[in-house]
Image (cartoon, rainbow, N blue to C red; front, side, top):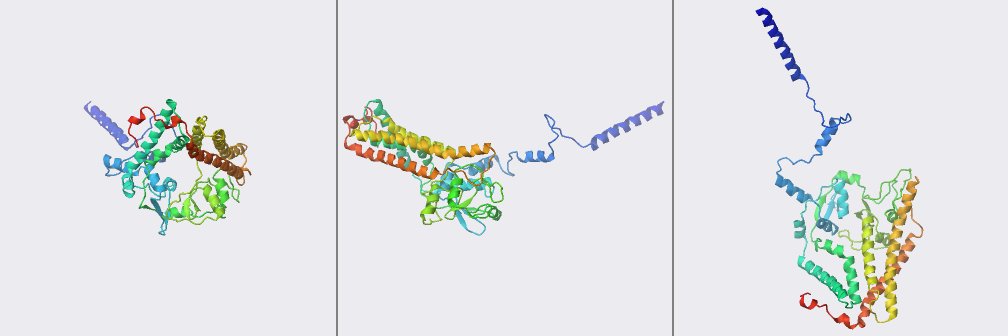
Length: 408
């Protein structure tokens, strides 16, 4: 009996040992919580793990916070870049002047890192006069308050005040952004460009087929969304590549001034500075904002419909000019988006255009509208000063509380 019990104990021990060995040799499995997805493999898990935000090794929380603050891109950085504060140097040692749009493209393509220049360092590199900016904004605000107060108290407002206030409304966004703009940048920061990036970005003004493109075609291509094919029938890349069309300067799109300067035989500019006469191709949101502000400029002159002028003819021309300015803005906006409408219409029909879609009347009509708008705006500007020769008595009176408020 004792032998049977000993044999049973040995059998239990052997069975327990086998179970223990089986548990120790079995590979551990990890199951995902949630619906079973057989398509997820180890590579996907590793990729997901790499995308998690992690602190760098031996980096404290405060150091990480400071690093992220240094790597951020602010409006001051964009102004500094557009003023020539950043230069790009390739592996050959050649230096190119770049703008904020160029840097954005290069960073997104991971050709360069985000510049580590802080806003404080930008201020140190430029001459900033915050007091002058503050006083200018205060003067603009005082003018707006005066015009509103005079309207409430039934006092006449001069044409010069109306025109000045119109310019203020148009440049309101500029005033806000201007406060972040550096002043008189003296030095610049050099960004190093790796050799492989130069090989990928062909700094030449060429097509995919290798033929040099005409500047007029580049300007038109920047204003439409139709598809363009090369000589082999392949669709060309979108018109946003880094090209040289600005007298040797890398840029993204052909501008209006580049187009006509090409035909006028404009002299080359200094490659060490950003030109201040560029009228770049604007994106749709910027176009809408410009249209709204221009309509506001003309709308304020229409609001002065019954403003007293020296003669009835001057008042009639004032009204006609105000209406014409609004009509010109609407016409320009329509022409600018009519090409896009044609492109979308052809795309829905499955058509691919070998070239670009531009109505034959596009450039002549734009020139005519620009001339009419310029003449109307010029008359309003001249009349704003000419009307000062005759003003009603109430135009010389101040608002009730204006004399008690100190102002410049």
